[in-house]
Length: 153
Image (cartoon, rainbow, N blue to C red; front, top):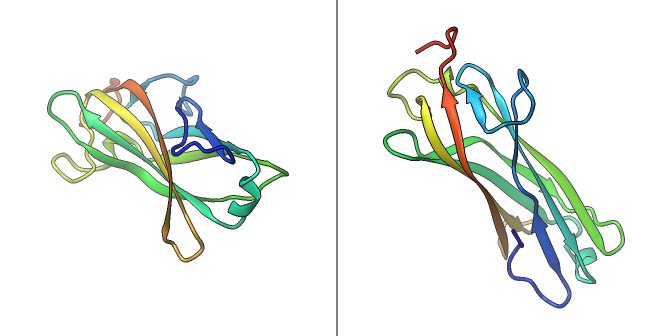
């Protein structure tokens, strides 16, 4: 998905999301007892990229339940400083998420078994933490959290 707005002097792309479960190869099915990583790559190119040096992207992962269930941010927001190399910049951003079963049932952040939509959102901020109007997102249509025989309720 392209970062917006695209201009003559700046283009950007967010690559598709990869879920990394330490117990398995990258997949979109996660055991609720396993912590996991949401990985995305952001890249910028064009003659305006050097002017973004020192600014930072704030990237978050959010899920939305398909049916009843948790909806909201998973894992922490990740700040990534832009350090251009010539007219380009790229970064692999890992959002480390706790196990879905790590929250008590009924508490905020408790992710029950089921299917969810995952989206990663990113916005560019200046050094004073003011948004600069450059934003983007990428979604992974569906992920599923399941209970293995050893997953707590």
